[in-house]
Length: 211
Image (cartoon, rainbow, N blue to C red; front, side, top):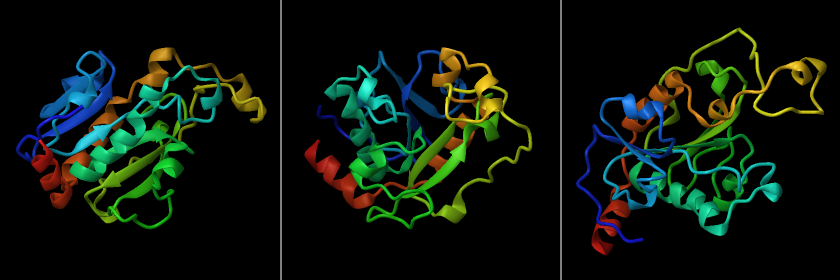
């Protein structure tokens, strides 16, 4: 799908692949793309927070019903973050990292200047631990906003881990919405990260030329 890039706005942030009832829609200066709007129609022009579908890339991908079109949204989202700056979020150990040559958490930056961080959404208020990987492009690791510190234990699990300890086996499951939705504090933090990011000027110019 071909789109024309919009003029770069350093204050604006796009959030791609959100739920129809997403918390992001309540945040100022944020342009949201849900399923009805179709993230692939986003013309670029500002940093983005990307939450591409993950079932084709997670540990249970072999049992998912994701088709190739859905799976392709992952690499497409990586391209947008590399071109315009921003942050991509996926479950920990996502196979998208290997498929797109993204640096694993703890490694250095890649050729696009992007780096990865491992976080837990429980730090921002999720009832489950929910280990998550972030790929950030357009700012330095030292520029990231402070992460919250919590000493409380997660009360729920996203999915039962039969190999886990007895405590995790007895914790209740999160609701379907909790598994998909981003905690409000985490959403605000991700938008703050994106606002720190600058786009790749050379790639952006090429995109404008193709438009």
